[in-house]
Image (cartoon, rainbow, N blue to C red; front, side, top):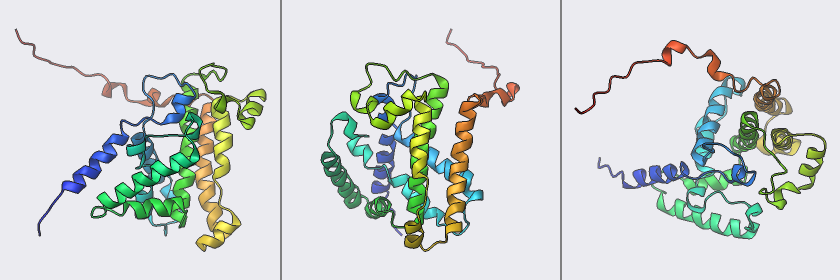
Amino acid sequence: MEYNFKDDVKLFMVFDILGDTERTGPHLWQIERFRLEDVKNHVLDLMLMVRILRKYLPGDLDYNRISDYILCHDLPEAITGDITKFEGVSSEEIKRVTELAIQYLGETFSGVMDVKGIIDDYEARADLESKIVNMLDKLHSSTTFIKYESEKHVDMDDPRIIPELRQIPFVVKDIEDGLDLADIFFKFHMKAVNISDDECEKYGISREYADSIVTAIRGFGSEFYAQKVNRTLLDTKKDFPQKAMVYNRNIKKDS
């Protein structure tokens, strides 16, 4: 058997570009941090969420399919960047360039994996696995801002925040109600962590089966938010073994 890894390496490097593609949301909200999340971070976080939650989720799910959706759902952004309508780019224009990116990825890497088919099925919520990844995707938008808000309060009156964001009706109301940015994102995105009766019928699952999935994903998100509220979210390093964090370096210097 002859091996030809040319396209495999090229696809790997497309994923690598995602590591240099920062997500737009934190920039639009003027998050001040040494390093903002990139799309590759987002993909890895979703993979970790699934691995952590797997013991709470049904065992008959196709986890290979879930992994494919996670890996590919934002892959076009390696070409287009992470663009939103809030930057003055119309939905039609976003759709146009995204479709061109998906077409390129599909044609270029058909011998490596079915990138176009995976993305198309994800966008169509063709199966329960794609629905699960979409719910986790929404949840992660929330957990990211919970982390940022926990690190440093976001001033939503910052004049650098574009009016299109700051003046969204539900944002205006939530700010008036005293909510911070993490509260708003959590409240908004958790609405998407839901499987409707119509979706139960579409995926051929029972209400009880669907609720077990939603409960697991919501439970993880709720615990994340609770640790923000009680200010323990950033305590992770406190339990680290100190002896593992202190070590000698013997670096020989040229005389």
